[in-house]
Length: 450
Image (cartoon, rainbow, N blue to C red):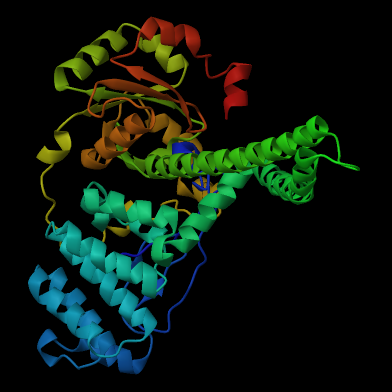
């Protein structure tokens, strides 16, 4: 079962930022003391592997029936059982491991693998609970959850959305590192927000101190008498101080609100950057891998609406290709029809999951290692097929909510070469307008967009 690394690049932005998607940067490589639990550098999965020590080798060579009662052996036995399709028995082993006083790494492994079992069985609430405990108590990286193909079905569920929101807000220390990395990206995108906050607090404090001394003078001015200050002047000073405090507090609260909105958008961009596509050559890639190569145009709607838009786009095929347009059709409801994949064990084949970008890893370096850019470019045609349509639908509907559009309406979303959303609209696009709007790939404006 795979476990991935976390990180946020300077711009988690869509597939654009995923080059290391913080637009967010990335995750440290770690080697566990648990002999069957090892992080592999430049992989997005954490696998249990045979032990490097003689004692662990002997334990892994034992049959499931010869199980030794240690947390490590129970976890490894659970993996063996799962690989044979005995998911229920594997769950028992992971639960047993948690009862045998596991060390933190063993407990994290048991909880995470247990969560993957529940995800395989379609048990969203149990999956979320296991992951929540691992995040809160055993330092599981949230990027692991975002990267793992075994949790693709869970990521399309309401339970994942709730867990992701908790991580973004840092509730109960869940995903504290995730929120911290998001805030770093936010500061890069809005570098003067911290300065504004500082001056807001400073002006509020100064106005408050001044008000503290001015109010007694106002009472004295109202009472009148010898030596009393001018009433109107004093009242004006009080009004200025009160107004300054109100303005400073309002600016501080406005900055906080904008930061939360920005963090939510960065989270959506990070999610978008990880969504998978199948190219015409049947290669499966994440959207981040197409950064600087194409301008994806997402078409979401009913089957009839999307088909009609694709047919109309064919009339402008040559000009759209010159502008790097890659059509990404998403048909509402296709995610529910997606057949359940029969797994032979945790994780996807190593070639399929190798070098997946994640929050917390060096964006540029990881993206460059994904593929030879020229070879990938040669594989890109006019249209790509979405993989895990349930995840795509969830992202689009979240984006619609953020833009106050009724979720589920037909929409199109045009992305920039750097992966950020260029613009979106209801219904299907006017292809002639798009041809006029987008510059050719060789144009200077396109180079500036990267």
